[in-house]
Length: 407
Ligand SMILES: Nc1ncnc2c1ncn2[C@@H]1O[C@H](COP(=O)(O)OP(=O)(O)O)[C@@H](O)[C@H]1O
Ligand SMILES: O=C(CO)[C@H](O)[C@H](O)COP(=O)(O)O
Image (cartoon, rainbow, N blue to C red):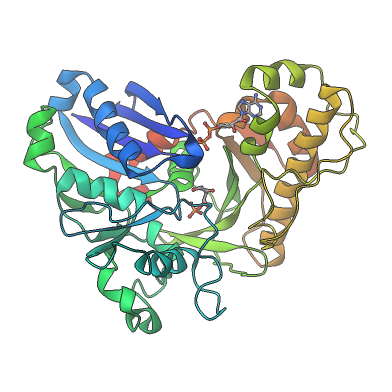
């Protein structure tokens, strides 16, 4: 039998099929033309494009599928799962103030904002990206997992919606929330027939993109952390304690009987890409001397606003002065992002998370050896590159192991 993980990340979507022994049998990816303008039509097209690319024999022997999506990307859909307005992406700030200036959990604020938009009066479901894509596969809406639902305000301790959220008008649109990996339903007969997928294939409750990357690494010891160096910079530390701070943008996801303490900074590979192609990043990085400081004090952001290690919606990028030499400029940026990472882990420690002992790197920036060196010096703990840090692989592991993925 085979297991399919589908990852809907910030810049594109990926599929990974693993066999019963956990080995990768097939991988494919689709890039969004303009990632900042991605919408439900792009995700639907990517979903079916990726399914179509899987070798026929593997499709016919798929036992389970799990989908991960960008955390905090939400939409309203009608009874037939048709989106009623453009989705709000994870980094959309239009709804961040909430109503009456009272701060609300990010996705909840987005849902309430969407409900005020034209054409959404017949909304039946308020869903995260991964929930909606899984629903397209099962034909069953209104289900989510406790990872995606955290940003809507779902309580990971009581495993229920808080009473104050249940009293809001949006409550009627909220999903039923189950542990990630829980079987949701069998694949719907339409996509099953169209793509010749095993009709007994189950679709499991998914997770967020960075938690899928965490699962991919196989990290299981408290004190071990995964830094995702993708478009954004996401820190996840496996901790025996739950830590939270609105001021610092720190929160904890439930991870079975443990916690994934961390946060997501708007810094990361996205701001590097504003200045350099991936090829230039490789070439310039090779010329950096990581043991000599650049002498620059940058806070690289792709646009104003930071979420973690400080919640500062108006924080301006600091990328001046720009030296003539691009090697030094990149050096300064890599150091700046490493400082943000180190500050992030220091915040988690201050708040009482299990002390950091090792960092595993995942995502596009993790293959940069010079950066790994710079980061190791800043962090003061071993920094290793994940053997497997692809979110799609993590989602495939979730499809295979289900709720047993969590300690
Ligand atoms: N050699 C490199 N050094 C540093 N960053 C890199 C390098 N190669 C790619 N990146 C960054 O990795 C990011 C893409 O990583 P990826 O994990 O695919 O992102 P996402 O899943 O968020 O779409 C890009 O923003 C790019 O700038
Ligand atoms: O910038 C992101 C896009 O999804 C991060 O992956 C996200 O904010 C991290 O969220 P979570 O901790 O819920 O996985």
